[in-house]
Image (tube, rainbow, N blue to C red; front, side, top):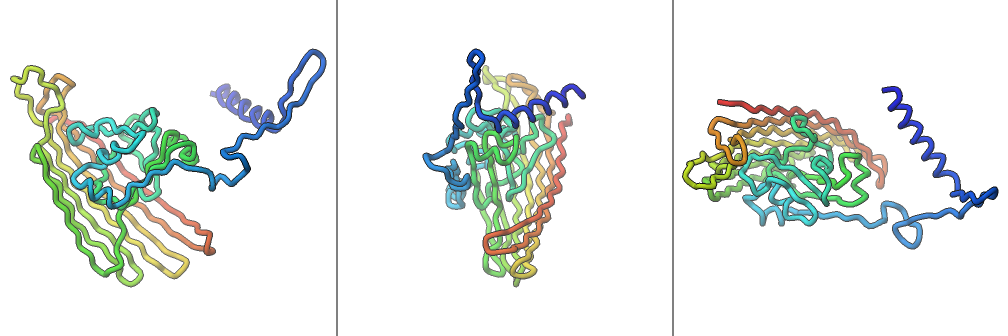
Length: 310
């Protein structure tokens, strides 16, 4: 273990020293220093914040036109993004692949806070735990700028922004959709602003009898249908203390249960998957100047994953 740490440190410091020195060409007994080479995104030096970025925004209007679709189905329509399992039976694994990168290399943010699923191998967040009806918009950052978020964002960053309360005291909203395989999706919520308090509470349920994930090539084996039942409750509360200081709290409870088969061609009526996820976020924001704002966010995430035979 000590040898590995020493090697990494040696490479790091040597790269720093090499970057500070001009390139040298040794020819015989003489040494020549080449001129410094600078690579920029444009023909003239500019700030990094002004360089071009590949950003895609899925606004609320687009999400409303996709009513009844899951979050994975919405993301799967974007260029450069493939969500493996988005067209499968509800409740299957939803792995995000961006621009050919492996699963787990696309960072998922919920209201700007990274979320993970500790029950998976790659740690990638399970998109089944978020309902598209509770999303205000989605921001997708692809390209080199995404690496600013760390090694988990080599391919891209997907920032999912949840709905916020309206300007009225009380606003009520409901949305219902149905489809094939006895699929039903319903969502109800309340939101508004009371003096200096902005709030949003929304509940979403999804039920489907589904179809068998195993393939019945003969059509005579009578494979059982793999259904799903999911419940999601999310609440956001923001309290404005004064013109410069505000506190916000957000929480989400997700639970779904889905059936599973024993393999691609083997049916099983007893395999079920149960997934539970709880999120609690507490943030404070203080504005020190018109153009400067600092915030502190604390997020607690608890994920439970159970594979059981009934």
